Length: 153
Image 1 (cartoon, rainbow, N blue to C red):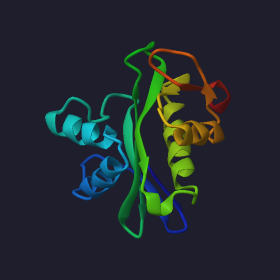
Image 2: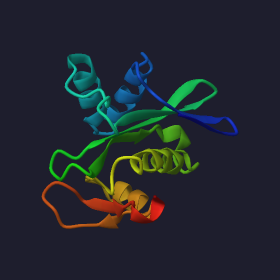
Image 3: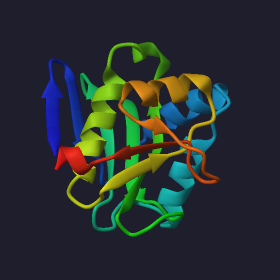
Image 4: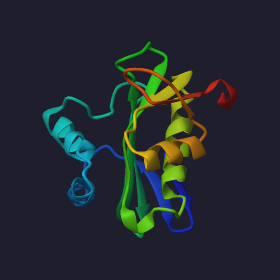
């Protein structure tokens, strides 16, 4: 899957490039550890987003990784429910619709296998971003937002 918009290309990642460590360092500096978990899970094989219906997408500008995000089965819900995971956009490109384009591609991919996608975020900025992407807030121990894909099929 490759989508290009101007200089932005979104494509599936099957091998973690060394530049993921740059995104991870930036995320850690902001207090986020989820890319550290992504790298560790990838290395030990715990999660490579390679099960049917899953994917890890990267957004690239001029060949450089500027955002990443994954789609997996939601381990806290039913088999037809997906989960957005490890979505991160580098600070330099926030506000330029890179994150929204990435999430839209993840959701488009999700329609092939899932009827609902859930996620969890713990920041007001993340919550506002996902609302702009069409998610609805929910009260759940394992998710903060949900989006039905019934209309997207």
